[in-house]
Image: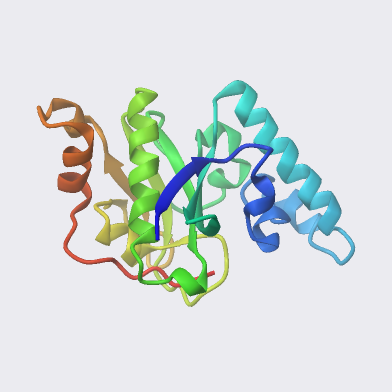
Length: 207
C-alpha cells in the first residue's frame, strides 16, 4: 500500500466524508452555524463550505490535506488563518496568536485507524506552513473527546508535539512552534521527525 497527501481543492473536496462536507462549525460563527443546523439545510451548508474553501484557495492557498492509501481517502485535516475562521473567537481560551495558523480538524477514517495517518496529516500541515513562512500552528483541543464533533482530542495534539499555552478543563489552546525547524541543518523530513517524534502512533479516534 502507498500513502500520500494531497492539498484540498474544489476538485477533491468530494473525497471528504459527507459529514465534513456539510459541516460549517468552523466556517460560520456560532449563531449562523446554529441557524443552518436544521433539517433540509445540508445542501446550504455544503455550498457554504465549498464557498469557504474557494475563498481560501484564492486568498491564501489550500486550507487542508487529504491522506490517501492507494487511491482511497483515509483521513483529512483542515487549517487556516484564524481571521478566516469565525468560530475561533468563541472559545474560552481564544484568541489564536497572531503569528499562528489554526489547526481546525484532524480525522482518520475508521478502517485506517492506527496506521499512522494522523501523524502523517500533521506532518503535512507543518511542511505546508513552513513553506509559507508561518511561525506556529495552534489548536483548540478537546480534553473530554469521546468521538464525533469537530475538535481535535487534546491528548492527540500533545502526542504529536503541541504544548499547552492556555489551560482549560475542556478546551485548552495548544501550540506547535515551527521556528526551531528552520534552524536545523538537516533536511525538512528529518527535522519533522525530530519535532513530532516517531515513537509510536498517537491515539486519534476515527470519525
